[in-house]
Image (cartoon, rainbow, N blue to C red; front, side, top):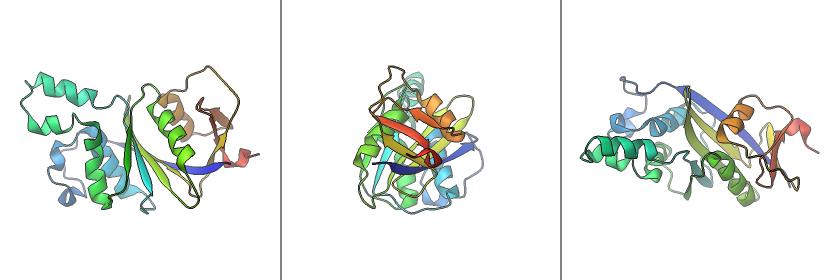
Length: 198
């Protein structure tokens, strides 16, 4: 059975010395890492802010960047220590959403988002909506949301076609920004434009 989905993303600047529009709702917003900040920025700019049934936090590289900063600072900064915990980067987003549902953290580089998409697709049932949220940092800062189980222009189809090619997060995000025909995720699912549904 195909699962419809949509994709939202936001390129953002970080660090930003100006208080964001949501700063009054998040204590110590100025101590956030870029991933946490980007997720909050994305949430405030999303066209539909209907809460999901379940959220997957796709956390490529986990908290490695903050771990390194914490060690380099002499392991003495409580504000940096907090962000050495992978699930912490979602706490500000969950505060903004006023949401207290289940959250799964996924880390499987170089295919963290791909893995989360496969796991989420297997869980969607009935009217349930599942989000995959995260942030990617290559030549720019990018926050994203993949929403499964709602009307969308994309679809995940179960696939028996096997491939040994590993689809990376960078490949997936590039495809999502400009979808064309289909992408075999090598997780038992093929992602395609809904116009290509069989």
